[in-house]
Every structure is written in C-alpha cells, then in structure tokens.
Amino acid sequence: MLTLQQIKADPRYIIERLAVKGFQGEKPIARVIALDDLRRELQLKNDNAAAELNKMAASIGKAMKEGRKDDAEKAKEGVAILKEEQKAYAEELARTEKEIETELLNIPNIPCEAVPHGMTAEDNVVELTGGNMPELPEDALPHWDLAKKYNLINFDLGVKITGAGFPVYLGKGAKLQRALIQFFLDEASAAGYLEVQPPYVVNEASGYGTGQLPDKEGQMYHVNLDNLYLIPTAEVPVTNLYRDVILTPDQLPIKNCAYSACFRREAGSYGKDVRGLNRLHQFDKVEIVRIEKPEDSYAALEEMKAHVQGLLEKLGLPWHILRLCGGDMSFTSAITFDFEVYSAAQKRWLEVSSVSNFETYQANRLKCRYKGDDKKTRLCHTLNGSALALPRIMAALLENNQTPEGIVVPECLRKYTGFDIID
Image (cartoon, rainbow, N blue to C red; front, side):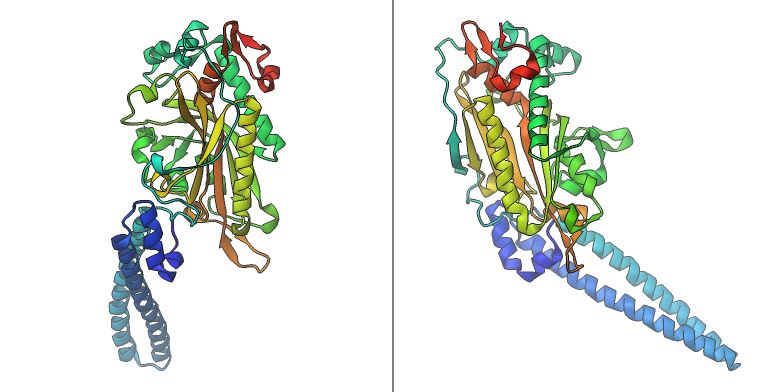
C-alpha cells in the first residue's frame, strides 16, 4: 500500500497518478490526511495524559512519605479519572489507526511515469516483436481439436471430475506439460533464481501482503472452514516468505523461482476467448520473484523481461511485449509488461506472462525492509513475472507446430519429453 509519507509529501501528485489508472483519488486521499491529523491529535492527548499520570503518581508517593494522606487520596481520585480519559484516547487512537489502514488498503498503487495513459487493452503499447509467424494450411486445427485428435487433453473428463476449466492431461500431453515445467525451472535456476516449493494455500495475511486482498477476493477460491485461500499464483506464498523481515544489504538481491498449480475463479468469463486452454480455473505456472533495493529494481525488471523473452525465443514462438496502459494494470503494480504469443490456428495473440515492478507498494503491506549501510531501515522493492504460464504456451505450441506428420516438439524440450513429434 502507499505510505502516509508518500501521500502527505505531495497529495496532488498522488491523485494525478491514480487518475492514470482510472481511480478517483480525491476523496480517499483527503480522508487519509484527515484521519492522520486526527491520529496525531489523539496521540498527543494520549502522550500528555501518560506524562500527567506519571507526575501524579510521583506526587502521590511524595504525599504518602510526608504523611499527607488526604492529599494522596484526593490525587488518587484524579488519577482514576485521568486513566479513564487516557483509555478513551487509546481506544479512539486504535480505531483511527485501523481506519487509516483500511483506507490505504483500498487505494491502488500509483503507476510510474513510464506508464502510458489509457483505460483499455487497446491503449497498450507494443514495445518489441520477435519470432517468425508460422504458415499453416487453411485447414489447420485449433489446439482443442488437436488435443482430441492426438489424445493429449480431455476437457470433458475434467468437467466430469470437477467442472469446466479443469482439464485432464493424458499421455504425451501430460509429458509435454511436465517438460515445459522442468525447462522453465532449469532456465530460471541457470539465471540465478533459487527454487522454492511453496504451499498452494495461504492465510488471509498473505493475501493482504501481496495485494490480492481485498482487491481480488472474489477471484480467489476460499476454504471457508479454515479461512484459507487457494493461490492464484506462486507470487503470493513466495513473496510472503519475506513478510515482517528486515534484510541486510548482503542478502539483496533475492531471486526466487517456483512452480505451482494456480487457481482462479475467473468469474464472468465466457465465450470463444475461454475455449480450450485459453482460460482455466486451474493451471500450471513457473513464477520468478525478486526483492531489490529501490535503486536496482528497474535494472532487475529489464533482466526479468530479457529472461522471459529468451524462453519464448528458445521455444520458437512468435511473441511481442506490451507496455500496459494505466487502466489495464493491476491494482498493485507500478508498471507491467505483458508478453503475448501468436496462436496461428486461432489467429490471435495470447497472453503468457506479466512482468511487474511493484516498487514499495507490496513491501509496505508486507513490512519487507532492509537495513542500509547507514543503519536506516527502508522498504524494499518487489517484482515478479510469469516464466512462464503453461496453458497458452501449450496452445500455441500445438497449433503453430502442427504438420501433416504430427506436432513437432521444440528442440529445447526434447531432452525432457523423450520424443521429437506427437503423432
């Protein structure tokens, strides 16, 4: 969340930047500032009451030593009254601090200056394009038909067992999934990321720490009895490893990667854009997460983008990078770059990765800090990216690599699959 210092230093700037995301910040920012003024007033009253109580306690002790019992008893009555006043100040102070936190939790991160203006996906900016577009015959099949033809994925079985959006991978389809996961993890390890195997369910504090709560509460699967949430991405448990942690300079940067299944309700999704693997409720993904000093985070962001680009180039997929406009960014992001691959049979671009810098927004929620060489404690910057999400990668690989003989497996995956072609 935004810090009080950020808001109070230049509230007009904060309101202007929030408007780039389409968020009307005038009232919530004014509310936060007013509550903080009240908080400081209550804190002063509470502190003054505590100081006066100390003085009165000392005067009572002195009166008792000097045998002035009547004065001591009268002072005790005053102490009792003042204690009640201080209790009221403390309770109101706690309520005010909670109100401030609630307001801050519902204000999104401000986009950095490099974020384009715009409200929809049509306003995103294509940064870079690469790879060769495959030339497929007119009768080329979409991946859901290829999956059926070669018995790779059974969507109907998934519906039978669970419901729509939970496919069952079979035979070479399952092996190709496993090959992609291992390839992505090995590439991340080679790039210096420490592999983590996190839990797939998290508590409420973890959801608040990375900003899924309260913003995306309706998109997460909730285990009501235990008040736990199925993770929408490994970003949540991995970043929360550093909640309430003060790091030392020599521990930074932190580079973690993790494979996990991901669970998203995707409420309201329907139509051709969700057919097959295009949008699922359960899917596999390898995530990369970084904790950085503020001065290093944008260089780290470029490294992460280069890493994802390298994966797509090795897979031989046509790709482009989008710089997201303010209105298409997430609640928590300061800047986001989406990677999309071209699905030749569907003749459309499919998002396969988002790489984001959150600056101090998540770190402030998490209380993820580091102590600098000057011994001052500062908030870290957090970053994450998909490297990569599997369903649409699988869709593009199946569609783009189909031939009369079968589906050709990219060379970088063959040592993992044990086969060169699906026929």
